Length: 484
Image 1 (cartoon, rainbow, N blue to C red):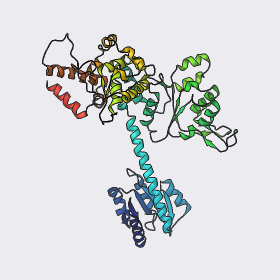
Image 2 (cartoon, rainbow, N blue to C red; image 1 turned 90 degrees about the vertical axis):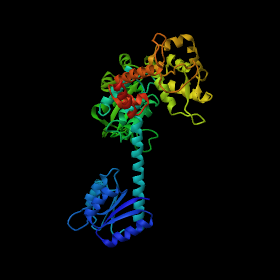
Image 3 (spheres, one colour; image 1 turned 180 degrees about the horizontal axis):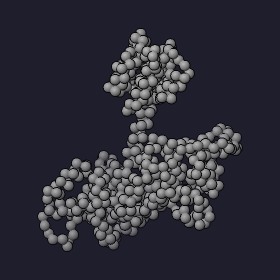
Image 4 (cartoon, one colour; image 1 turned 30 degrees about the horizontal axis):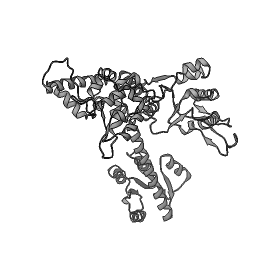
């Protein structure tokens, strides 16, 4: 049950409410002294605070208790009780964050119900905060995968503009992760605790899209039996993500332009504007300049949307990221025996050689299929989609052997179709002078550590994340390097 802090200057009231709450199974900390109660708020960290508004006749100390309780981390839910009720004090209490306001004398059943609802509300808020924290963690910048120069530029841009209110246009082919970027921008901004509303502009017909985006008044058209809030209103305080913006009909483009210019919307069938505080993110998989030239997309809207463009490169232009993406997708998957999946060197070569017209989404789906079909938890060429088998020849092996990133993912002396775990180990080339294996491995490790640090701009946390080691391990290896 809950931890409850109770403050009231009437001793009989404190005794009665304390017994009532303890009979319900709650842990109660009763106080009749204002200063002691204020101090206990810090030490006890209660989930629920029940406070009298007037702890003496001079001033409403309950407001101080309320403000202090709401400033805790996590904040406590507060019920204010008083024998000197007034509309003004009730309104003031609710404005300061009180959950409810009860007038003495109150009925026991009424009080119990109020406590039950307050705790249920607090539990829902705590769960929402937890989920928001998990979402933020999921969409942190170091959760993105890619060491290629193109992706490093993308990560740098996202980090710079996330906590601004600027309109951003995300450009990239289908499957490159445009919505993932939009979520990263939202959950790393000051709007992270407000709604994130994604809208696919190509998925709805024009008349329905207008109602969905801007809302409508009752009777505005056949079937409008109630007033409806639009998605811009639903996203108030947060972010709206307009995917496939290039498919938006011309009439709606003019209405969207007004939202961007005036920060207000008008529901269908309504003449009264409604102010909205919304950050707009848009995405397209085709150049909008082309649609502007064709006359199907407004030029003024294009410039309003294209304040800060973020270009996501196709996967075929950053092949060095494919091994990293493969390991990323496989690291959280386990087979029926609870073991992590592995992939053979030749299968990885095939994946790296493919052009991936569907980009990262297609790669993820291919690995999902391979995990379902493979035997013994080891993904081989035959487990991959048939269209990829054309890359299984010698030409592929020669081509991929030029990629140092792929070499680091191969195991020395491993057969061409032996399992390849996610550990990065270098491969010796025949042109290098022979020396002790330990010396060779250490030299390769030092070189790779320096390379990763260079790509992350010296950020050791990002480097450790890319390497798949703890920050402590990275520091130890760097100190060993200095000692050599």
